[in-house]
Image 1 (cartoon, rainbow over the protein chains, first blue to last red):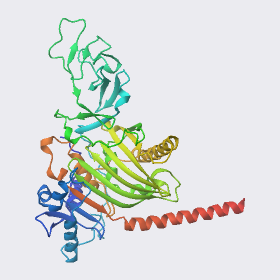
Image 2 (image 1 turned 135 degrees about the horizontal axis):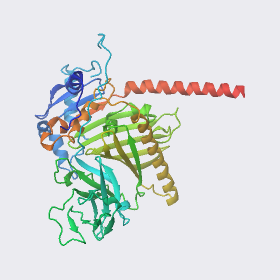
Image 3 (image 1 turned 90 degrees about the vertical axis):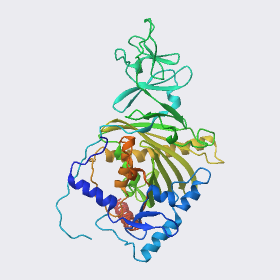
Image 4 (image 1 turned 30 degrees about the vertical axis):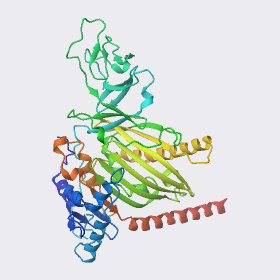
Length: 100
Length: 384
């Protein structure tokens, strides 16, 4: 057992809130990638990718083809545009709850 | 906003894992081990012996001889082997006993624990895995082009023992935006994290606070662009671009550690500065020393917090905080068997912190501090 184990049941609920709370699935408007997104404010964005979504992302595929591979800091501009669109259309709520 | 009254919140100290992380761990500058003597390194609650054989290859074994437990770190290098001070058993870098000078033959079972080694950027690394897997050379930290050439200053390398903290405290900093203001006296203006695979990265821009008059992050004349990536659990490369009054310097800061017990670790940091063009060697060395000092001060600021804080498995966050839960989930991949790594531990995660509100507040606070100080200075000069 290698985990950092909580000693309180409430911690498990905290982990769920901070890791998964308010995450909403957003589909890229350009490719088949689906990611989970949370926005606490206009500027704040959290994006949870999956392996499958990464595989679909054309932008990342293009970046992977360049010498030295895909720089980890690069984000997908098409996905970011899709998130902005989801906010504009009211699909993605902006604003945190109690710190999560 | 919740208005519900809630009970007082308890800190969950959690239980630290019994094992130590899987991955590459840096032991220090490789050449410091090439002085013809065996070296002792404490790591993973044990003693290790490090030596360079006549072939110049660096070797790392468990520090105790499997014969009668002699301390190999007090032994002698003989040829390519390390000889035990107790009965002169000679151990090779492959972990096998090569020779027992007084014996007809070496027992076939005479094999001790070895750690696979690698050298990168002038530093010595060992692979640690409680499961005993072969070293994964693909995830060694990247080579830094031009470091160790004349274009950069030599590594300035420092070691500090930290007691009373699990090394995860050090990792938590990757996601900690606000501590840069309070602990390091800088305004973090942009802050972003990306966790993916075995890497965790922090992108930050910051400007020093004018009310603290400190070096490093906190110098009001400095703005910083920083990219800091953990390659595995224990080794970070921090690429820094420091703009000091319009004079830009590129600095590479290594931040790595060796866990020594569940509540202690050895912090090591090294600095190499890209030599600015058109400056003489003496000035370049002076600049490098100042940066070494100031980033060293930065680490000491963190240490003061770590040594006094409580471990907390259930941090309470506000919406301006960075993704500490996600960072810890990433970090757990190194503490479970390779077969137990869950996709979410390694899946890409991006997090952009909104620093707007924080900086509004901080700038007002700093302005107030400066105003108060000016008033005090004026009062003092009147008295005088």
